[in-house]
Length: 236
Ligand SMILES: Nc1ncnc2c1ncn2[C@@H]1O[C@H](COP(=O)(O)OP(=O)(O)OP(=O)(O)O)[C@@H](O)[C@H]1O
Image (cartoon, rainbow, N blue to C red):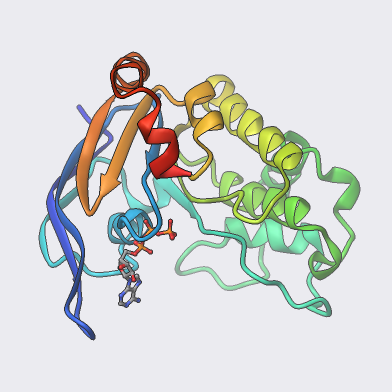
């Protein structure tokens, strides 16, 4: 059974009646490293927000085989105020908050899971730093550790490397690959970085308001060869 199915989904923003996503359909299977690509304004972020319930789906259905606790969502880098008082450890621990339980009552197991997530993301040394003082790449690792400490089965990321330099971006993609392969976490990621997508993704979905391509890595390579690299120009 698919872990997630997007079935004939359309999303229209109510304020300006703009159709951002039109009749999009695809399935995500457990274990995949799936990437959604497409040019600016092609509806990628809107679709992902529809999947995680941040914007309402106008028609069609998003069918989750997982409960909301079993998937995690990481958005684009958001500006964290320089003087924001929380430390890295505190931010990662908030990933363990559960509905019905009040902060800051974390169990020993919660703290262990947060420590393990920091170890995986190689940010243990930063545990007592204020998050506002970190670089963009470090902040994204902290937010990824926060998303991972609940041990999600599906990780949904919206352009996690926007604004990061190429070396940090390459490191981040490799880390996501490790999380996919070694921890068995299914990945669904919006990305602009076609080189990284082609290196790692097992499933590629190309948006242009609707789904213009939906296939595995080999099918994507065949299409690119037929089109003479056309997609590299439209996506980047
Ligand atoms: N909150 C909003 N209200 C109204 N229209 C919106 C809103 N957010 C996005 N849109 C519009 O919906 C369309 C799709 O935008 P979206 O952000 O989903 O595209 P995208 O593919 O993620 O783009 P990018 O690659 O630039 O991030 C665009 O025409 C955009 O202007």
